[in-house]
Length: 433
Image 1 (cartoon, rainbow, N blue to C red):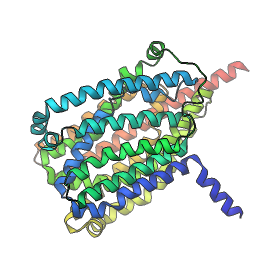
Image 2 (image 1 turned 135 degrees about the vertical axis):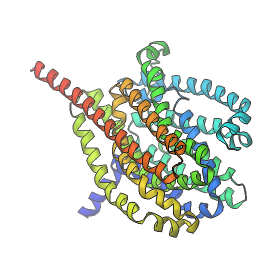
Image 3 (image 1 turned 120 degrees about the vertical axis):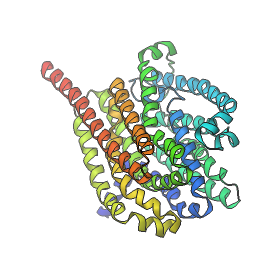
Image 4 (image 1 turned 60 degrees about the vertical axis):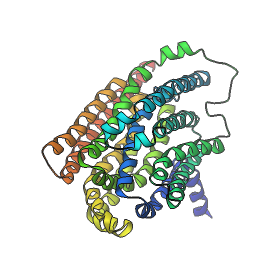
């Protein structure tokens, strides 16, 4: 009974709850992949990679970053004001994006070399709006440390995305079934948040309502700096994919897209759980003035490194064989890309969960400089390889080395910031005694 009780306590732990929800959702996305590779072509996966990349970049700016500040205020009224600012931004920016997508649909399709933005011009605005709403509602749950709601969200999102891509694909709605599944998953995730978030996310209402202007002034660095930092961060992650499609063609990019999809699915399960728990606990320590931030960062980094090292080695050794067996012989080449890029995903797996520390400590400028540097280096790696006439495999090697170097620098910046904060708290404590 003791062992059973201990297991039950572990399953009720915050990270475990998020992890279970993520495992269900992302497990569904991963589980249907062998079927999807037999329904959709590599070109369809290339179109998915393109629309996902564009929406990820635009999704980083649609709320102007207000949701990233929701966890910081000590009072619920200010937090609710930040959420209202986020919804106002989403409505304004989203309307502008929809108009631009419609007016420029032919131009965008020509520039990006894909008809997806002309045939389905509405898809990007809808997906981006869903991403923004998803982020705003999630931020209130993170503030309240309502991990049950986050678990419901993750499970519902993945299950809905997987079901949509399979059902519409089998019905012959190709490639729209694959492309629209991302938006459907985000919208369904909002329903999951509603089911799991029965208690008030921004603390119980106290009858007060903060005025927007003072809140806007206090947290203005989030829209003025953090928004563009996040946009550049997304560009650093997504622009290489866009450039790969433009410079190497949708077939090669489709193979690479499957590589990323398969590796990212299990990584996302744990990274999401770790990131959300870290943000909630880290911001709680900040509000409480605790001087143990560096210790919490290093603990999570070590845990993720130990978890990720063995799967990384397995993919590095068996990549082509695994991909060929699971997804079909036509996709074995994607396993060769996986052998290389998996090292970069290990670095992402280790560092990304703690990367929110810089923003929470209000080092937005430092984060922005790093994001710009990473975006320039990764995009430059793809362009230089293409101009030099190198095969795509060498482009993947260059991308991997760039990601490893930049994530190493990011971890060093995070540790420097947390140590400085810890030293300040320690000096304040000694001065008080």
